[in-house]
Image 1 (cartoon, rainbow, N blue to C red):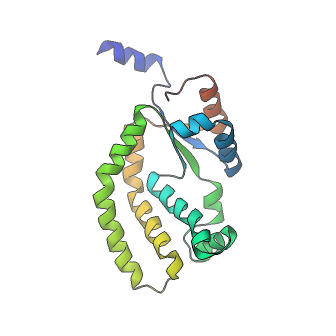
Image 2 (image 1 turned 60 degrees about the vertical axis):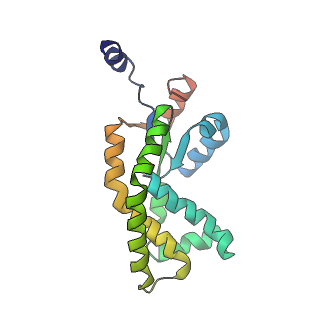
Length: 179
């Protein structure tokens, strides 16, 4: 017991959850230049895993709708699903080592409650005058917002470290993060 406690005190990078301040360009740079690290860990650019599902849906909508990415984003902004400022100020969340498993367990534990919430939100959305092609996006966004306090507690409980992009890259280069 004392050995692990001493290890935690002497190794400030013991946790392997990082919430990194990034721009879109920095995220792309990271994904291109650290491909192995990116592939071997859970990385997403959003405030929570649930919010990342919302953004992934928006990325897939242009192909589904036969429209441009710009049109989908402008349409989502027009219908108050997001703002341009939101897109520019998203953090990158990185889960490495055993914390990837913790995130998976968190998602499994919350799957049924999130599914029930999504079902209720879907029923509510059907009765609203809202563009059909954005209804699922609206449900995913509202579900992510409802889940945000729980996800923040999860990050806090698991000692997530908030860092700048430069600090994060330095940690990777120095081998301070568990893979």
